[in-house]
Length: 108
Image (tube, rainbow, N blue to C red):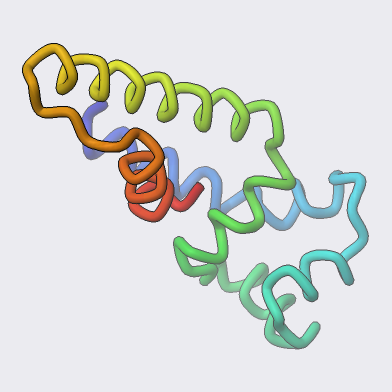
């Protein structure tokens, strides 16, 4: 995907994150606990659109569960394909080890 498109999509997300939180089935307290944040700071971040990428990743898993599930399945599928290719090339490494590393890299 084009980097400029990604940046613009991120900006769009930041513009609507407050509204998405309001429309979600979760109460604000859930997100405060999830982010370990006081309400004043939370609302300031919504108003100023200043969530960090780590915070957005945590929030998005709950705001967009079906998209998150598709993302996780896509990543896992790619990892499986990579493992199969490595095995075919004699570069076998324990799949569980690869999966752990990839989950850390991709925040899963």
